[in-house]
Length: 232
Length: 112
Image 1: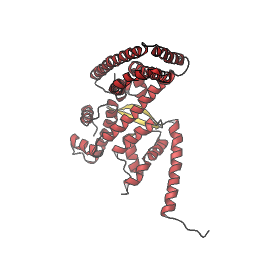
Image 2: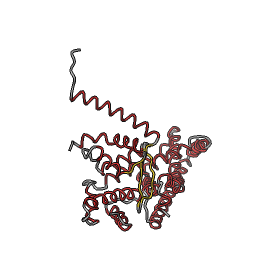
Image 3: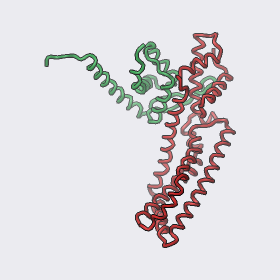
Image 4: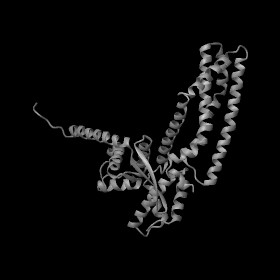
């Protein structure tokens, strides 16, 4: 006995009920359950769909789909970090490195202007935090909208749009300390370090909040062979 | 029924070896194939198979293909170039391990 389209739909629903949020992970599990259910039916044709499904699910052990989800998340986080790294590297090779290094020196000289240097640093930080708040809110909204429209939530997409935002929460927790960095600016080597830190921060936020979300379609197509035809 | 724990550390090598022989396979097929080859002695649990596959994929040893089969999507795994090389490494490591175990469990004494 073969599974019908309705059964497949029910299996997707079943995985969602068991905390598998993302479509790419659901798809693999649905195919697995479906194969197993068909085999269970071959041996025991009197079982109902629900009974066969539960028998198959039990084989995943007491933690259910949790192990699968966790490992997949780890794998995708690693992938995401690799993507960030590949973009970041470009800023340290010619020709972009010229812009990176000159930004560090521009900041360094501006931060060193007597009396006004630290105000420049404060305004840069305020501007930066405002940008992050607005941009993160926008990205999270955009992602929600996409999930509603396509009714599919892809793990990598989720990471691209939400992880970046949550990463910056760490910075928000440290706002006070970051502002206090200005007190160290009486020493040249600290000023240089703060300039490097500021440029890196700006680069990472630009990459994670602007560049990668804009390229998300391309990245998702490369990651998921099924992306194109699942969304049509 | 052997002790499943003894097989635990070899799961990735088993998967790689199967893929080296079969071009491409999907998760369920792997569990069935292992069951068939070992006559039910080794049962790969679902909760261990997929994490292992995803780990190998993240390490760049496996590549993924997706095909529509009947009314559902199926994800196939196959070895990458690196994966093929790594399979050979891991198999020789396993062979060494087996030899060492053999010596420990069943030592041959000589007069030398």
